[in-house]
Length: 282
View 1: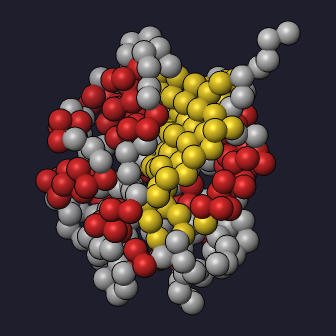
View 2: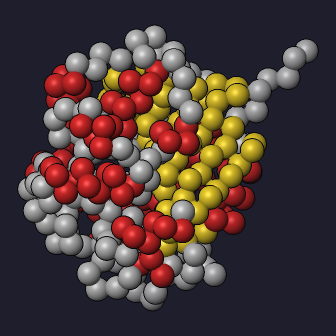
View 3: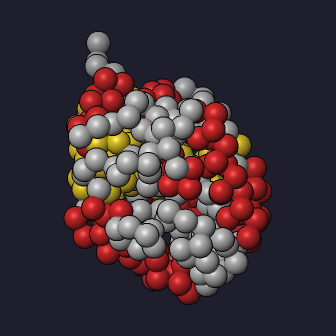
C-alpha cells in the first residue's frame, strides 16, 4: 500500500494549505444549515443545506451524546469530524488542553467543562473566519477559560511544555507535513502529557486520481496515512505508549462522504493516542 510522501497527497504544500483554508473559510462564513458542505465529505454539495438538527445527528454518529451537543450554544457544532477525541483523552480538572484545528470551537467548549475553572483550553486554527466564529461562540457560551489563536498546526503559537493534552478531530490528515505536526505536539506537551486525536487512516490504496483532487484533499479523503506510517512517525518523534485503533463501524458515516464512491473502501476513522515520556528522577 502506498503512502505518497509526507503530505499524503499529490498537491504541493502551498496548494494543499490553500484549498483547505478556502473550504473551511466557506464553511465558517456560511454557518450550520447554510453551508456548501459542512462535513468531512468529498464534495461541497454532499451535505448542502444541513440543518442544526442534522448536524446534531451527525455528532451523535461520531460518538457525542445528545446532552453534549445540546450543552453548547451557538454554531459551534458544524457537523465536522470523524470521532470524539475527548472520549479517549480522559481529561481532568485543572488541565490545559490544546485543540489542533479547533474550527468553530465545539470540542474546546466541551473540554472546558471537563477541566473546570482551574483548567484552560486553547484552540488553534489556520482559517481566520473559523477563529472569528469560534471567538463569537466563546462569547455566547461564556467560556472565559477558552482561547482561540490563529496559526498553522505545523507551527503552533504555543509555548514549550505548556500543555497537558493535545486533542484534534479529523484535522491532521489535512496537513501537508504530518511529522511536523506531531513534532510540534510533542514540543508543547509537558513531560507525561498525552496526545488523543480522532482522524482517518488508510486501509487500502486510494483510487487513482483522488490523491491530487483538491476537493478530496480538503474534505479529509485524500490526505490520510496508513496506520503503520503514523505509528512510525509518532515513535520517531518520541511518543511512547502509541496506540492506533481503527473504528470498524465508522463506515456508517464515512460511506456517506462522497456521492460518487464509497470511500470507506479505503478509509476508516481511528483513535490515535500517545504519551510524552516523563523526565526521569535524578
